[in-house]
Each structure stands twice: as C-alpha cells, then as structure tokens.
Length: 106
Image (cartoon, rainbow, N blue to C red; front, side, top):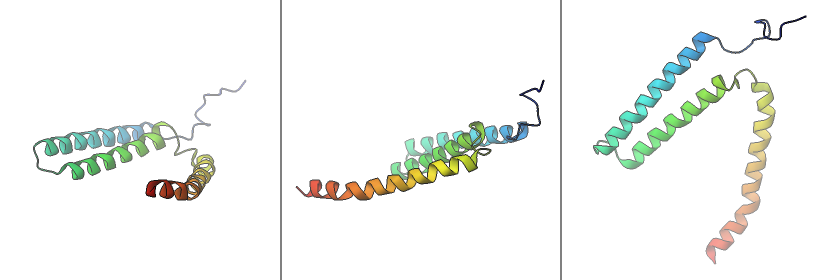
C-alpha cells in the first residue's frame, strides 16, 4: 500500500521558504503601520500614504496567494484560468462602456 503523504509527491515550498515569507509579511505589516503613523503626524499626505499602504497590501496578497495557497506550484493550472478571465473582463468593460458613457451624459 502506498502512503499518500510521502515526501516524493510534495513539490511545494519548504519550511525555509515559509519562514522567509513570514518575515517578509511581518516587515510589510510594519511598513504599513509606519506609513499610517506618518500620515497621522502629517509627514506624508493622505493620498501618498494610501498609495503606499495599498501597494504593500497587494504585495502581501501576492505572497500569501503564491506560497500559502500553493499557487507557486499550481501556476500552469492557474495560468489557463486567470488569463481567459482577464480577457473576458476586458471585453465586458468594452461592451458596457458605451452604456455607461451615454447614461453619464444624460
């Protein structure tokens, strides 16, 4: 009988990669708090702080998605799901844009 949890089938990132990602997430969270503090003390503008925190949030989401959700291993499968979705989303915007613009003018 074969063991379904054997290390031969495991192709995901190892413990060291998870710890590096954990460290990166901790640093990015600290950056978000520092930027928030700088905005509160009016060192940075509100729009600049928002842009920086949003950028950090996107980076953190990508790290969590690729490593903790194992998308780094399943990228060939996800590739064929994401890009058709982007194409359909762009086509939907192009199709609905005349209605949005015409409704906006009235």
